[in-house]
Image (tube, rainbow, N blue to C red; front, side, top):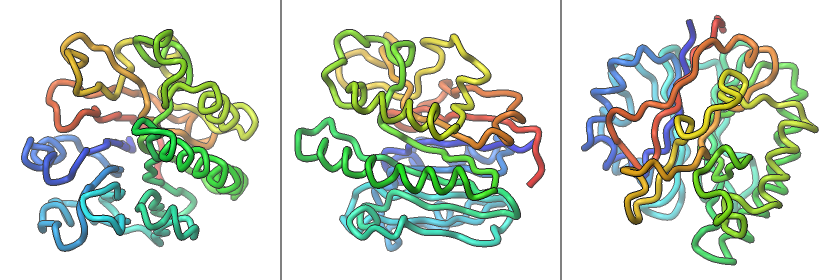
Length: 260
């Protein structure tokens, strides 16, 4: 079995202090994708850089305490691709890809537009420029799994208060249409939804820190593993881990009957 985990850490130092690495050591994961490091290379401890049994690779944001993505791998990859080759996007540390034979695993972190119109415009710009890359990846002949925080809930089932969020970033019609195009036009597969087509509250991966969102499970499903059809068809189990909180997000764990 080939296990992939994805988690937005909301700060790697914060997640470490909450026991993330002790938990990780018990998960028997082959690849772990992390987002929102909120750290630079100089901030990283040995445990963060290379947890026991893993090789670590990172794409840091230029801005201190902001964004950044990483991948932990049990096997050393054949190649690492850091960034998209688009300077303003790469300055925010939003994309890293590890290649193993015919498999690519990507850790990606889409911008949030919730802080206002300016960041929503950045998010739309990212989406527009990321779509051709998604199309090229889909047609590259490799199996690909894109893991990460997409900051978009696709359908009404993917968040608790969908009626009240239709004009809010993360559930705007344009965002939902865009991720729908990723699935429908390009043919990517939402792996969790393939296995759990009707899951509602148990599918949520993020909860606001405001009010009692976590306690009342007023959540959103915005973290995905989105895959090419070949490897997506080999997914046999998918779950969201909620027993311990490392972040305002929860780990999404998917097992594939697959050998790279």
